[in-house]
Length: 409
Image 1 (cartoon, rainbow, N blue to C red):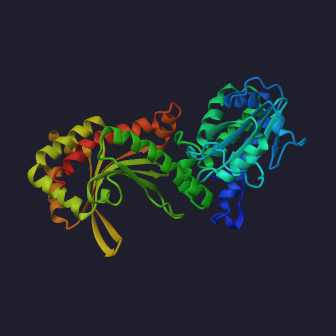
Image 2: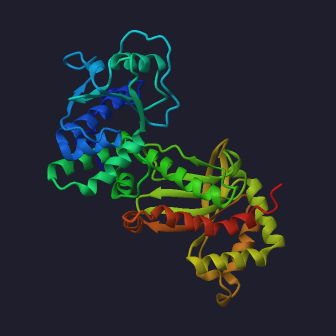
Image 3: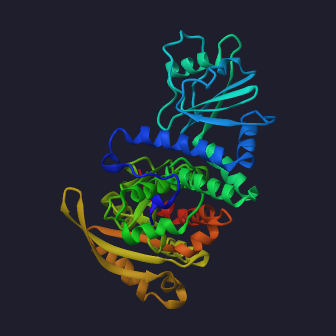
């Protein structure tokens, strides 16, 4: 994958990780928005202006990085709007504080009888001094209207508009702008696409790595919200650091970090071939509970796994963890069983091998794992059901998670 094939996505040079990345992205997002509105024509800017409360505009012009309109007349317009766009919902509200020196707006949208001053942010809230200066530019005698939007709301608006576009060039611009917002982490997770999986075949692009990790963060946040409503146990999610050479990106669900590692919890892991969804037991406090369940509730545990198999087959993966350094472990595969080998009709040989191996290993590592193939996730995403499918698997797993944690103090 290469994010730079997008019309709006830009190279940032050797300073991609420095403090100037946010200002660069902030300016590029505003420029992309204004260019999409300007070049997309009336079919694009009319519904956008209607969305911010200007439904009767007949003509619109656009400017970037100017102190005022060409005639210096912003304060004379009948309809004046201060449009603030931020990454997260803003708490700022117009106040009557002293006006500081003037500042340069990010953009203008204007025409006969109206002027929209655009201020955008991608981190933190708006600066009171800056916004007061903008209000002063728009005129203080009759206060302008203040409209707040998040970039996610902007993304949602254009994504909804896209199916209505009939002009090919306008549709291309809007689709590229929607994709640019997604690549820039300014949108909610909207589903899996081939790029999510292709990244792990090459993983040699830092921008793509950052995008995949931010996408995983957004997806995990959506999943965690659903899981927490289902069971209070899932109070938080933890997304792993995606290094350039890593072959997967994971997110874990359970108690707040790092406490979730001390119990059996649930994890999703993105790979080149799909998403692995699993309940896992790793640290000693959790594996001690696993051994305790096998000692006192072995039949109940097996029945829970058999019931899980009826919902959807899975792999029971058992490894041995050996500590090599303070936080470095070596994993040795021991047993991998398909869930069909756990049903009563197959006898007890496979189950006995599993339980005996767990008890003999000083530090076993257990995963109850399913792979949801990339093609299935992409297809489910077309009807916005990929997240729902993954959440259903996690909720089905919860009976086993709860059982393995039942001796938790």
